[in-house]
Length: 372
Image (cartoon, rainbow, N blue to C red; front, side, top):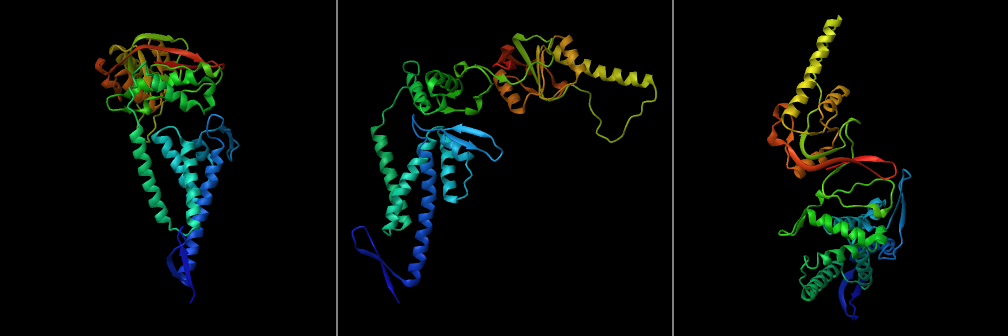
């Protein structure tokens, strides 16, 4: 039976294998090399999009949608990757984006470079676990060195100039780099408005980006408040309300629907008039309950028909319908109001407060939004 030797980098034999084990080892090493090749292919694809002079990639989906970007996380998210090791790099980029929000391309290129060196070690016959242990030790040394040379920085100094520099650096390789100072200011303002500086924590869910077609990229602006992509339900309603007392409803302006499958038969005009009057009384009672609470703006998660809409307009109650569930929760947080599930539960204590609510138009298509 043939004996087979593996040599270390100094030329000394350190493993002696029999013929069967030799075949098994070769098969394992080939699999590792294929995995490394797949990961390096992904890394080399992203390498050209790295840095301020990085090239944009055009991605075409199976539906024909075209995306042009140089953001590593977006490229890997939209790519159709089948190889499992290459998928790991895509997940690495996604986790970097979730945790840090930047460096998605850099982390993949770094991983590809490390794997390139790993392939040279594999060619010399070193076991993958040994290589992985070496990378772990190198990581510890690198982190220790970074901690040694790091310096504490007062981020509040010079009107948060250090934060602005960080934002400018991060924006240098993005599509909006021609206005990076403007967008750096927007980013710093947004983060500081929702940051808990004592806990060093930022809730990014409280920062929303509303995109509108038309206008220049420089028209982007920071709005302290909430923007709802809706308009007031009636064109004759007031377009601006100061010192607003907001009633946030998750119940519709409509009569209750019977939960049984029984029908109602109307045989004459008197019965129809009774039914119509009952429905009108429901609407009148609902609007009265809102008005009596002191509210001067209604934000409703559900829709309401034209009759309720007309009554709200007559009672000078500007209303917005079909407000999304996430927006309803943000409105409750921002206005310090309570979400009201039934008209019977409306009280002045549950109303939210806002300095100004107005309807404004954006972009070249004059789409309307509500600004709170």
